[in-house]
Length: 169
Image (cartoon, rainbow, N blue to C red; front, side):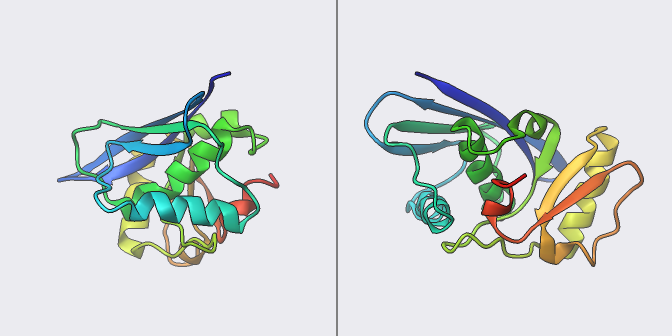
């Protein structure tokens, strides 16, 4: 059986741009592949795996492929790793409202314990305004960034402190 999900994040180079993520869980040997995100030393995959395990979720025992598009454009892992983890959880049916994530920008990183560290406050605000220009009405950012980020009218912001907070929504 093949499972699929879509999420979004943002990139910066030289201006903000939309990063679309598609995750496929399919039969095969257990492996997590991140296409379009430089991952020379496996640290990103290991952090995603450890963070999911820390919140009680084991990655599927089959092939999991996360495609970050556009693939040839550099991405800041600190902005896209949370979107990768959320996309995997959504594809495996662990997030009840996963269909709503297709129109949501997800920004942030994940620590091995499942916590979501803050991102640069200026980046959070810049991307909130970019989302508004793109007519995207919901963004997910680290909860530590909620207080210091000015949000444009019409954009809903959800703060997460741990990735398992999405599992209960």
